[in-house]
Image (cartoon, rainbow over all chains, first blue to last red; front, side, top):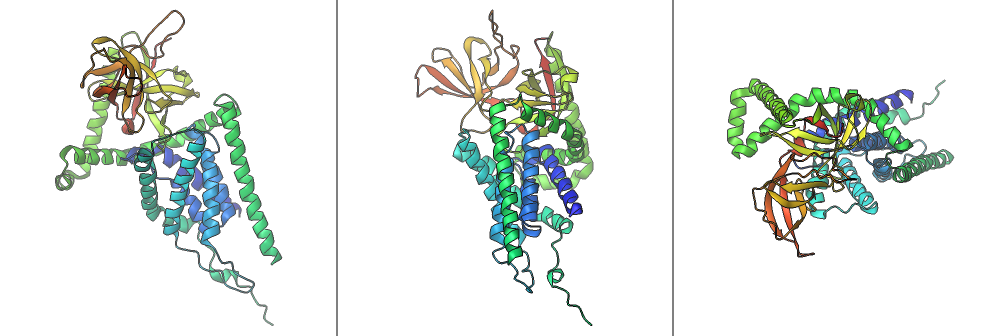
Length: 179
Length: 289
């Protein structure tokens, strides 16, 4: 539990720093990849909604703080994404004595999560009084961000899977005492 | 069943608490702006992440330069085959050489621009962080109040010819500063057209076009044409003075048309000299000290 928290904190910090320091310079069309959403989706699939929501909250807070955006905006979006992905990706829960169903495929959920994060961010900005031109926003923020997030996810998800390896199905089978 | 119910309640409580915390922070952030506790948190966060951002910036710099070099070649020659052949021919060594040559050219341009500033004092710095979304146009630089940087100081970046205005400082900590770029819709600068003393208006980000500026409030009677150079106007009255010294290049006029809404002013599109996507070195001017 503590090890998990340390790993999550480190991942949040490293990805947030990379997101603001490295990726904006290699994005020719505007919006850069959303590295935090990759972590949030990975945790939502493999560690549950609590871990994903906490990581999303912390990551969003850090991003908002270092980019001088209104604090809480990105956190709100990421917590929402964590909840949505964790809820809708696991429609079935193991009953007593049943094996955990295997975690769903990550990439389609990353695509959905990245899209939800972009749309959520757009809705928040519009609600808070920004009125960006829709076409510009689509071609220079939403579309490139979703595409780049998904592409980087192809490389990053296996790494995150190694770090946050889902517990094997057998570990959920209760042991039976033998004489 | 009871366990499952407890788990669901706990999940909902965690998500609910985090959502409530986000909304509270958002409300506080709007009410206090950058002056209160929220601003303090943000300044501290920038200070904490800055050393790591510097490392990340340096580590990824060769990759970024290689990317810029490759994309620059692609756009210049518009030929993928040529690009592949060149890359195969010159390989990594050429990328490094190009990177160094680009850096030398950038620094030379910056020095040249600094020499043209005359009495205006300036401090050189490097970009540490850049906003990852199109909603916000800010960069964080590695110099702050300890180097003499203050809020509202104008910031310029080197270009191929000399230098160009990129924005102004909006937040300062001891060793870092946050710069709002000209592309931010909230950023207005008094600007004029070189050689036309009456062509003075406000320049701001053009709505609906990424990377393009719009010079407004220029009367129809004033002659402005494509290719004209736009610079800061730097007005000064008895009570007010512009933050920007006069004569800093901003961009080149790329189109001139009539204004449909008022009818008596022009709509002038300006392509900035600065490449906002690839800002690495900057000069912070200190015109008022």
